[in-house]
Length: 352
Image (cartoon, rainbow, N blue to C red; front, side, top):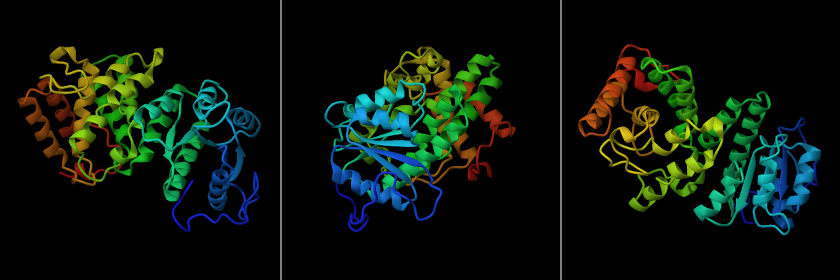
């Protein structure tokens, strides 16, 4: 494994559970790789940041180490003899005692299907080898923070929040996006006098609508410019990937249509299924409207944020194009102009 030149000192490498210069540790990390050099480099890097690091050379030993040491995060190669990283990850994620431990899979492959296999096994994130040391440290720091958060909670809501925060940790430009969509969609649902279960589904859908982006390569997801046509086609797969990730969980039955169809348009020009009119589920239509609003009012590397007033104008343009239901857009705009939309985080868009 290679890293940025000079980033890692491979001399005098610490041993398993190496002592720290400044206790206490900020977290326990289990590194699983059958290549000793890789383990040594990662161990040196993470110990320098204050983590306690242990290691295993295969999936079977990793499961034993997790049961014994209760790490805050598992960083695991996918290709190992015996039990590989995919199967070990699935074993951890299907065990109620370990399913909330973040698992980051290391792979040299950029193939999307390989990522999907990892996601279906329950992986929380991926690192591509050769890795960037700064990126590795940032991702581990974010996921350990999420682990500490979920340690305080043990409900379905905590799982949903942790999944959402994992995605947002990958892209700073979308920070707070899921929380805002959950709040906006719930507010619109209440204004439409939907029942409590419907509003709960919208709230969960706000957090999970883009869960499929976990399966999109970072080179596309984090690109600081507009996507090429081919890249956009890859990005569009997140709706299908997201539905697959929801699986057959009964608790997400009402959320799955949101995840798959929130990019559909009434005239059939959306994706992934080009649904038209009322064939698009109501919850997905609601999520589509608030998603567009938040995208317009959030600054991205390739565009500035619009004011809320300007975003409402853009939504009305989409109504005239035949993309959105006029009554839903009008109700959402009314909420905003009457200051009845939740203000999640600091947003310059509100000062219009």
